[in-house]
Length: 180
Image 1 (tube, one colour):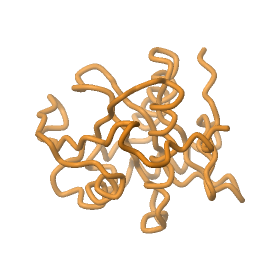
Image 2: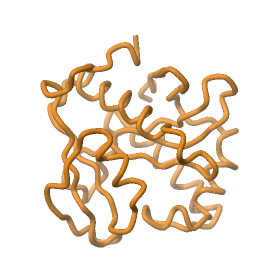
Image 3: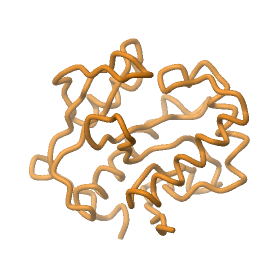
């Protein structure tokens, strides 16, 4: 199994999922908030999704982290690198659990994950796929400096907008302090 690194930001910890995260994760996937990413899902399907998240690390050597508040370790969402079968290329994605939107958590965690992709994995590009109508995610992509460059149709999720992130050379702060 691939060790999942821990990243830290000013307010957040990006870490491996734990069994104790499952109830919050399942509640998110059972809610309408998950409609842009294949939900809502029944609890047993949410379990499979959490296992998929962990398995992505094993199969590809990278994946998405549980995002937790630094002070309490309470899970607030999932952010990270994602490239399952059927994806056009490696993506940085973010999902915030209920009650944690509007605090800048998605942007803060995505900056750390993107810095990890560029500085540790040596990647030179990333996209984010955003469903039409998912205005919150589109705003996060724009705050991260991404621009909507094209469209992609996924077999199950349908029509998605492709946001291209600036490459490592275009970023003023590569963010190496996030995982130092």
